[in-house]
Length: 323
Image 1 (tube, rainbow, N blue to C red):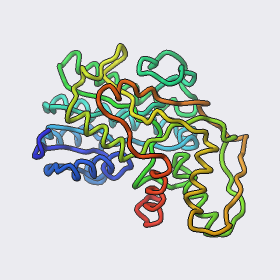
Image 2: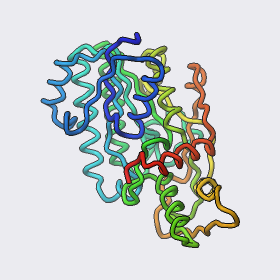
Image 3: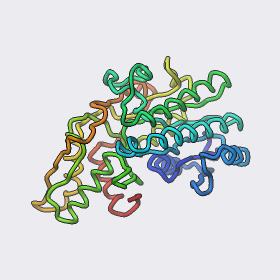
């Protein structure tokens, strides 16, 4: 990409899209276009086609998505499969028709089987059953990955896909009914600290192993790939995509303890207890990315979990979030 190339970042108000927008601006890109949902409904195929025909972006970051935690995915599976599939298909098709030079499709490691061999390699895609608590979202993301690969094969497009691990960072969603585990913990511990509560109630038993990636690092990775790599560089037997993560995991209990330490860092002799509700689902028992292919492509994550939590909590305190 040239610094003056016309770049469309979809979902720029979200965690991922916002991080990509900031990364591009910091790197000196000057011709970035965005649209809010009220300005462009990505579920409306005609509106998407009109937008691409008028604006003719050269590069596209497909970061718009309908996302949520275990509770939201379990309660509204129809919304997750329909909206994410339609958004992806509309944008990818419009990009093809209008000659976009390169598209970056943001997926998720939830595409992999629940019991995939760990660490999870890209080749694990479609080798076993999905995690039931988010299979609708996963199926939509898999469909868009396969669409990009099919377009590359049939139409000669240059559409890449990346599968980030669990994300957190600036501009996260802190709504307790729809957020992921990380932002939900930040809000719960913060509210306990503010109210003087002695106990924070958390879902599951704390045993699942998870990997967490700072959204700013993801943005750096996808911009790096957009600048330096093409679809064949990411190609595996199952598609043109690559995992993005840290390669480091911790238990949910360890995550909670670290979040609690950061939230209570400015207090003296004050903390709270954690109470786990084992009647609530744990989700996949372990999910760690194999990031060896991404490392071989020349990129590695830089932000430690504790430093990333400090940045995210500071952002929460300054109100730059959806609550």
